[in-house]
Image (tube, rainbow, N blue to C red; front, side):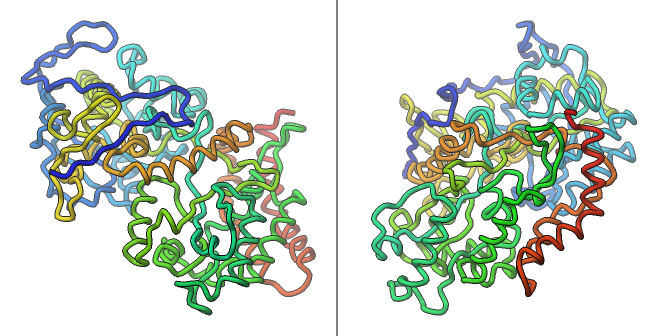
Length: 549
């Protein structure tokens, strides 16, 4: 049998070394479970059946999966004496609207997963349309409470909505945070290092200033047209989409370039484009567009066409994604399409500011939310919280993502070897195909993003590429204290002018400025003046409500 071996390595971005716990065996036919906080046995004699709605990111056919039959389902169900009844698999197009209808009508499933909307939550909480957590839940469900505190918004929600909570924000990372204390976002750039070397560049770095990447593309334009694999007049330069421009050319150079922000100098809120630095970045971007550094097709790329062009050999550089699964999929696509070793041909890099720091804003440690039906009895809700509390443990996370030790994998020290059955391509079968039940816990209460950083189904070489990117964001962002957490008060500010703003107004305005004829500075200043009726009322709202002075 083909085996997949993964060596658990200490990652430089972790505060503490994390090792997986050895799994315990299944508890057969249990009618009691030890309480996490008291050590006393809880009565589980009454069986509960739960309805659940979640986003169908696994792309299952609705109604086609039996979530109660596989052995992992039985492990959980026998441990807590429950079953799943109706499981509704929502799509990305309706996973926000359907829960709104259910909750407003008082006809929601026992619990559901949806996108977190602060205004929705506040309204539903005030109307008692959500089941609130019971008194003493912090000690009764300690694993769940630990996650709750890690979300980055729990205190804010308690102060501004209410306590006890009526929602649980699912956590992105617990055991394998890629950076700390600020969580970096995922964008990276990828370029053809084999072509760069063929042009005489001997040092291939993993972190570049924006000006260095621009110079690299310019060199390719001048010297790379006759390289093997390059099709003169067809091979593109830097493939990037319209919605990736602000990160690439602006946020990597100044955190607040397109946003409202609180100025630490005087405690007042300001608008990024009012700062002269933003105009200088507009000048850099326009020059890159005019000289063809940025692909002339940037405005027409959709979905992932910009990355697809690169990973099929059609461009020199592209905007990419640093998650290890993207690295794995993109590198394999490149090898199949181009026929070259991706590890010898591709460099994945991060963009630094001109003073060599990583400055894009970090992200909060949560994604999506669980809401609970107020129609559930207290006893049924207590059981569900016990299930979630257990699911938050390393033991349960290992079962969900690895299976059972001795059957689906083996362990020798820090080495995990997958022994799951193989698919027709010779790869280990996915946990979803073997154990459909694991699909239900792909996001709640800890998202798969956490385990992905240590997934032994992905060979170590791909992890090394991804970890280098995360390590650089740690080195140039957290270690230099130049990467900041989001402003939570601003994120959830509900001033009427702020809420009705167009969130792409800065990007749209800049694209309009660079395509106009005439003097660039004059066009930029005219755009800034045209935005005053929109921007100034927002600034007044923010400073009246949130200013430090």
